[in-house]
Image (cartoon, rainbow, N blue to C red; front, side, top):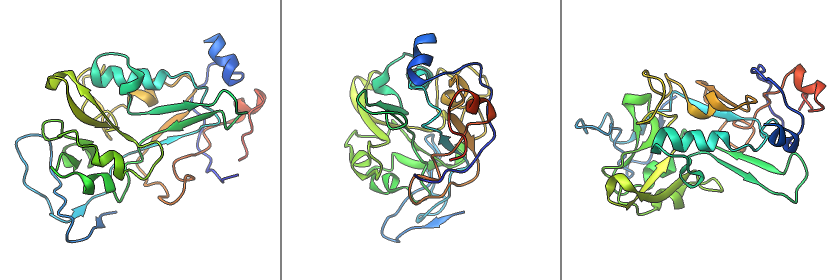
Length: 244
């Protein structure tokens, strides 16, 4: 079993089992040929440095063993970004296998805001950037996106952390979408908004605290850096292991 680092336990009201719960309720220098422009999505499109991608100032960590598979995070994600609840438009994905046993029955997949973002390099129009306005979070500028799907193909994670779908705001044309830590969320509930220095919808709404935000760069190789232990003593009383 992969070793997970221990983090402080969040506020937990109640939890039993997954099914019981549901029933009850640094700068990286890239190749000179890449030509990555670090820009925002507004009028200022002057590159900071043509061949460098600064690391994001924020990352999401998850505890799959703590996740109850309730899909609340997915619905909240699509709501703040799209103004409607749609599992197919969520930037965070929960995969469930009804034939598997705990903890393999649920998989909680989030964008890693990779230090070496191959999706950014793959974008042919510069629509996918490390946006300095929002702490260099890796995000899509819809105005420049042509919906080619190269970012989806380039993403090393399975399933891809980028999705392409029709966008009503652009006449139904295909546009890429990915987690931006709620940096660009037209329907955000907090006037201060999201992003690395704001509030992330999935973190705020998770009823069991299975998603956490950190500014520290996680280990990039393997899954242990992003899959962490968010369970405390209270979860041990409920029968969940807390020492992995």
